Amino acid sequence: MAIKIGIVGYRNHAKRLISLVDENQNCELSYIFHPIKKIEHEKFTNNFSDLLECDAIIISSPNDTHFDYLMRLKNFTGYIFCEKPPVVNSNELKILERFDKSQKTRIFFNFNYRFSNFNKILKNSINSEELGDIIFIELISSQGLAFKKEYLNSWRADGENNKFNLLDTVTIHYLDIIIENFGKSKNQFYFPKLISNNGTSYDTGQLILEYDKLNVSILNSYSTPLVVELNIIGTNGQLSLQNDTIEIKTPRDTFDEKNFFVSPPIKVEKKIDMKEDYSLSLKKSLEFFISHVLDGKSINEKLFQTSLDTTDLILKLRNKKNE
Image 1 (cartoon, rainbow, N blue to C red):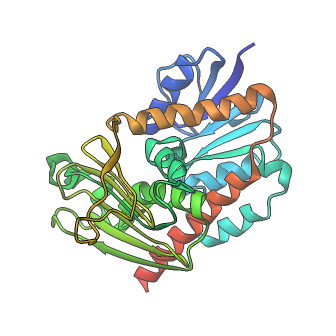
Image 2 (image 1 turned 180 degrees about the horizontal axis):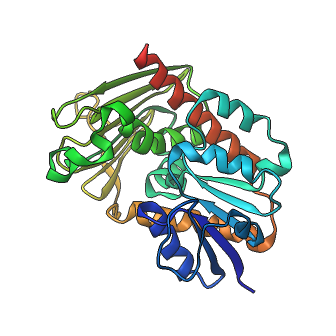
């Protein structure tokens, strides 16, 4: 029997989620909710209580409304799939932290890069004999959106309301998978810049995370050619992802005839398609959530806490730069 799903939102990202729900044979889209607007769709409603008939509710509305909907659904006994970020200020975050376990294990925040190839590569690299102990990670994901004509009139270019849009919508994903794999860092440094001079929000930013024996650099930008790269350096080898090709060079102890260190040989080389990584990770994320609804299983509470940890750090980075 298909589970009944209601969704808050109907445009942009919500539209993608609606399509994924429609494609999934285990789901039935019961309601599309908006508090005020009317749209031409047979499942559309302005009555919030209609959503309470569903087995699961998807919240894909503007970021600053997420907390309000979560509070309105506090007594909802079904499951909730809420887009990231969970909240937009520290007071809201503290309230979510006080949710009881039964609530936390029915709410899933959609940090869908947890299901990405980037994260899969990271997980496989930890405790890898080929790489050894990881001491440095560099993630780069950038493109030239800020130079498109439509960018200037978009919400992303609006520095008054979305000064940190890149941090909030892109960097947050990569930060989340680092926290998922390595926990909280002891120091963080963020360097936002406006490179294109188009709009008034930051279009480029580098985040550096310091751990006891690991440093991480995350670079995201809307002001470059398309660049999707990952570099992982360990005590015994190096993994690089560039141009959809993964290379692993190992071992460390590779010498020439004079016993000088030389670059290790390529022991692994394989192609990986990163072009559809976001779409596929979104689909996998929703499928992960749906599987728990179908089986009536609790969602791992650690996922809830990691989502809050990621959001907490994003808020602190924003506040520090605004001081």
